Length: 267
Image (cartoon, rainbow, N blue to C red; front, side, top):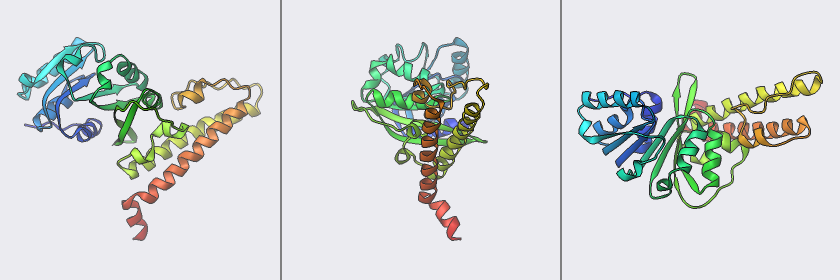
């Protein structure tokens, strides 16, 4: 008996490869750790959630698939108490990037020899900023397509060294970290289009003195762009335009590097 995972969870499972003990933070129905056990990708699993309801669902699924003896169910907030199980791979997925960053910041264990697989639903730029500023190194970034949406899966570990990212790199990741250039090209292009809409709206407000101020707490703008204090909206326009230009350059470069796209052009 096996489990068919959706594209998002399937991408996480593929990125993990093999592990001894996998901890799934925010496990919900528990299908990811159960699938890893059934496929032989993990020897044991720890399924964690802050609510009892999802853990009850995970328990029923573990019993249904015959792996209940290999799954520990833990009611906890974030990673608290999970270190006693000594996981070597930790998944934190299905929540906002800022919450994932908070969970990591409260777990000293994750600064050890542990592989992290992080899947932010929103504010991925905030998560990348936290990782870069707090000594975590991004080993790879994977993308999963579900309809019109692309989900990021960030593979990271503690290295003890900080890193510098541009605004565009915070939004979509560094190109060299991505494993699929075709998906990355689409990812960068979509980010550029979102920023262009915000920039154009701001430009109109600059031209219309009676227009309301643009809300800079937009989830699609990176943390530093949202939080800086500007005396002139034109400074924001310049920053947005620079970021858009970098995203467009990333898109073009990724499409040139994509073998499938190159073959298509030859044909």
